[in-house]
Amino acid sequence: MNRFTYLHVPIWAFALILMALPGIALTQSIELDLGKVRNLALKNNPDVKLAQKAIEKSGRQIQESRGGLLPTVSAFANYKRAWELPTVYFDNPNGPGKISFKMGSEHTFISGLNFQQPLFLGGAAWNGYQLSRLGKTMAELQANTTRESVLLNATSAYFSLLFARSSVSVMESALQTAKENLKQVQEFKAAGKSSDFDVLRAEVQVATYQPQVISARNNVRLAESQLRMVTGLDQNTELVIHDKLSYKPNSLVSRNVDDLYRMALERRPEVNMIYLRKTMAEKQLNLVQAAQSPALVFNTAYQYQGERQDFNFSKDDFFKSFNSSIGINIPLFNGLQTRAKIQQARISIRETDDQKEALLRGIRMEVEAAYFTAEEAEQKVIAQTKLVEQAREAFRLAKLRYREGASTQLEVMNAELLLNQAQMTFQQSLFEYNLALAGLEKAINQL
Image 1 (cartoon, rainbow, N blue to C red):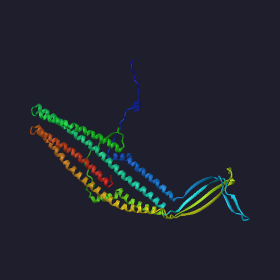
Image 2 (image 1 turned 90 degrees about the vertical axis):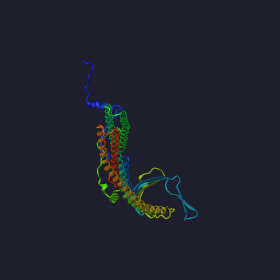
Image 3 (image 1 turned 45 degrees about the vertical axis):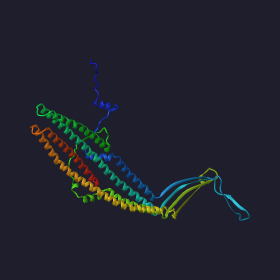
Image 4 (image 1 turned 120 degrees about the vertical axis):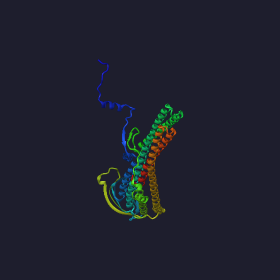
């Protein structure tokens, strides 16, 4: 009989045990591309959530302002205890002196319903309702602006990670090439075709690239943390990304600035917002002016009132009353407050014209800057593509010449250095190009 007894435990039981153990982090992975990154950013970004809540809040404000146009119905009840009843005096018609008597009861209880309907408030309620509706439209436009900013940040974080990863590839390739060169020099040294100085120089080259690889890998970790923060992913989530920085021609770069500016004016929410601000300022002026208009209110009350000298109320002690009234309130003087508010509202209207001019100029400058940046970045990519090809061919020829003894190791190292610089510059130009395209799309609200 074996000392050990084997237990047949299902695999799922082991999984449950591992999940229950403290301190064990179960790593998850997620495949990402630019579209998924943008969707996650919109889903998890707190600014987007706040913008959505602002829309919901403005919807409730519409309901609140609509109540100013509708009647109000309220129930009321009142109890009064008279500790000393008032005395009424009047002349005695039958002789000298005064006649007096107590009026009222010690205990009075009143209850009933009150109905009130504004008939005319000088447009205050209606303008308040329209302002609340405009406020919701403003919140929706602001949410669109927030959305575009979040998309740009997510796009920038995604391309930053791609650039960091491509930098690691370039530096690891440079390190591997340096090691191969060192091996070649060592073989030549053993064959008497190279000197100790050549070997030392090759070793220094390898040692130079090693910390650069470490730094590039650290930049990848930082870029991944930034992308996780933008998308709301957990730090333990493994990011699986198959994309690489690439050059894809975009039709926007072939457009002229005037066309892009017109597209921006049609699509940018800020343009609609500035016109909306002027409309809201005009409604605010109407609202302030309504404060100096007469207010006409219709009121109806239905009530029961009971009075007794003691507190033993019964049904027979109550009598009902039903009345309606129309009241008017005419403001005459309030210390010139309304006049000052009207002046402020008119200034706000004029301010929107200046804000509109500044906004249109700002959009024009943003579109021009984004367009010229994208155009320049595209030209750099095209130029760097040819440069990388030339540098790669020069490095191939230098290695071939060195193997045949027609050149020195220094020529190989210089060619290798130029190739590494060209590859890194090319990746940088790809990164700048993709960011510039995102900035141009943001400028015309097309992200």
